[in-house]
Length: 149
Image (cartoon, rainbow, N blue to C red):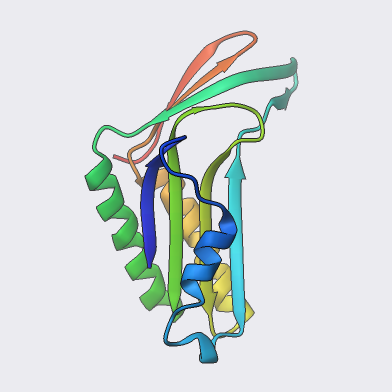
């Protein structure tokens, strides 16, 4: 299991790094599915009143070790719930611009349905349960978005 919160530019990870790590699982011979997700910074948000242009996002967490532990707990509960074999999560913190990766997740499991369902739950639970603060700077405002915690 690979679970990390990484300061942008201090360590570099790409999705293939997570996949390669998960494929070292002793259960790889039982695996029939690997699903991945990469969350990135959107530069334009369409709204009824016009487009919002996002210039950058600053993502932080007040307690990195606690957030890592919470990600590990989510991963363990998802593994049990869906019967998947391995989960990898890299969540970046720092200052980000359009197209930058914020979140990488991968799940390896026996079949596509439960493996995809496990990935979906990891994405949603990470977004809503982990204590991240997102400061979104755009052409018309600075917006603080809190999650989890």
